Length: 612
Image (cartoon, rainbow, N blue to C red):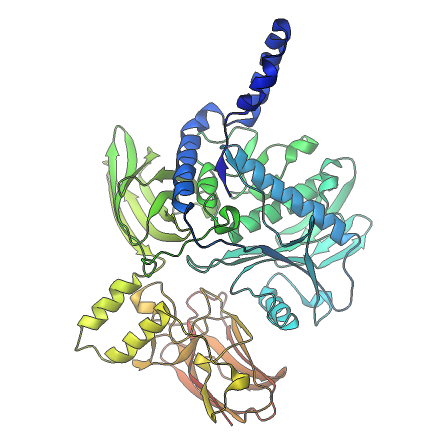
């Protein structure tokens, strides 16, 4: 439960009355210094007021909530088949993760909000770790191995660790010791947040025998390390820990829904840097070894996170939670400053909005953050004075229920300082409104099938259990999978994604398909067949509208053996597949992109079927 704090002096007042007068003067002098250091500074008072007002509103909103969130973050410790966990790993990581939890707690406290820290899965006072030994030697796993590792984790735990329905932190013991105080780190390193209603996320970070919050003051011992983004760094043990513990805090921010955020104007002191901004992850508690600056969460980050179900321990599903809240926003130039203001049609109640803004030619790590409450369905944010040029705007709609919607815009500031919109789009369509439009369009081709698909998205049914299914033919798009991962968005049955009407239905070569498995490359779906099926058939291809030059290869694996591999398929191509799967216990369907990156690799398995 999150509550607003009263001023600290309130608790000391009873004892203060008993102190002699001369000592009171000295105590007031000391207290004034202490309170000045732990309460928001003058420049942050308006932000703190917005946060505290919003928190009081949310406390009232959740007071009658019947849905309590008991979710926790589960922690996996992954190491290679040829090794063992690194020395003293459990004790080191227990105190280190507890320190990261305390960091988040302190960042909320700056704005008068009390939380209990990060809710890791615990047994008593200790964090619960799930050690997983990989199937391959440690050197096999590299920066881009997260999908393979995720699959191994899910399958080795029998689905107990589930990346689709919960929060998972994976600590990777993939560090080679090259000599005394010299290391090569080759671990995945990223954080990923699920979509607005999924209430899930995952995060991948590195372990090293030198990683320990107790070493944050060790500025005497030198060390060296390599990693994917660093060819060689000579540093101290203290700075190394600032980088890598800061990396944990930063990537966990992504897991919790935070984007890259450099903070707001006049928000940070010279000795501070935003944790989610450029190099913010490299300055975790630098003050402990006299480094500068030290990482902090922006006010906008706290404003967003204070209603996260993991922190508030409550999560409401509104009856309106079937589509995106609609926003009509405008840009104005008034009083020599630019503003974004808007009105909100409440598909779900909002307590506030936040904005990330940057010039389009600048890294997203430098995005400035802003926030405002939503009052009477309206909001207004002062963006300051913007020089001429194009800007990227990310608008985040913060729901009272704990969900978040977002929309992206590209704007142009002209030589008259007026703003025009170059692009606008949301990350989720209004599902209810889209369905209503199809329902009214009696001339629409495949209208009934499309309505059935939209109904299944809004009210999903339990997937078919392959073990207990008795018929001789089964559509895999409607079956339970043991593991699923896609390169963009989330795994889906019978549709691509909810980003726009153009990315929803399964269209290939101008033909509509009612059943299929969304498989944006790189992707992998695993089904436990139990050796009781004989034939797998499907068609493989890409979504209509994919730009020319995008290439994807499709593969079918049975019990780790490759049974089929397509050529490189591109726009308007489709390949029919028929594979013998007799005695196969575990079927894997993979799609891999063949270019430099996976942008626009909208792969799909169409009409996938298994037969006895």
